[in-house]
Length: 193
Image (cartoon, rainbow, N blue to C red):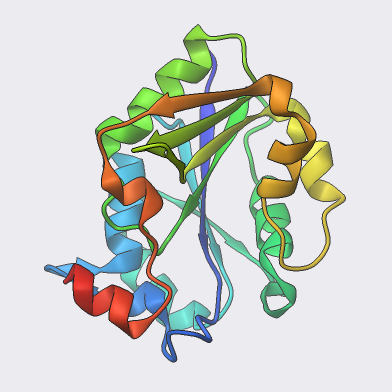
């Protein structure tokens, strides 16, 4: 079974939130620690954390964990640059990469494992979790889509690539509402905690 590298996007400024989401408390830890730990407990072969805004403060929270750090100097220009920074560090032997978001603390390891298992058992190159019919994150992309990501510019992520290759998409229904819940505003955060 080939490996799936996890890329955790934790570089954003969180303008709508008004403070760094990565460092917001979630239980006994911060959002970024919770996301990293879920990935580390999963079947992902490596975890690459992409940092940008507040790099030193965020790094201090996770530097004791066995992750690789990618810095996205162009993080202010949008998500595509952070994904490319993470992709540059993906193991050359990886069959696929999983793109996860640091503001989704309810995504658990079993859900991640279910997506990785689906990638290995079904002949599709894009694996998307769904909850009650809604698509969410994290999303797995076969290695061949790295080239598509490298040509993206601005604040776009995988949605464009998904829409260009509908025939290669597998939706996996999961029992985890967290795949559709990301924290964009203070209200979102308060409702969660």
